Length: 92
Image 1 (tube, rainbow, N blue to C red):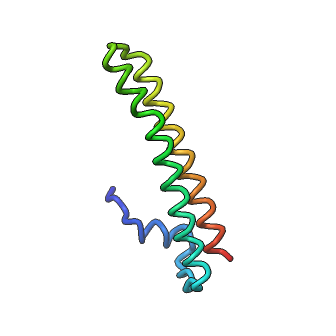
Image 2: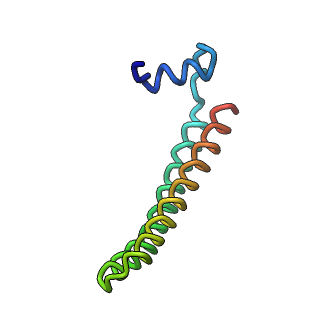
């Protein structure tokens, strides 16, 4: 089984129809969402990376692992929320 490209996956999801062109307002909103969520992700990283490094320095692998998992989950949630909001903007 061959891996599918992002374009092929998108075609399957939309039933082969192409998405209409975005308006300038939609493009601006998408760019704004990217900036907001990039900042939120950076905030999570800036908060947790020093704590992870400190846990590794102690050596407290268990705490470091828990913190790393917390950061991974928080970033994944933010990215999922970003995609949901972007999809809402694209739909109009």
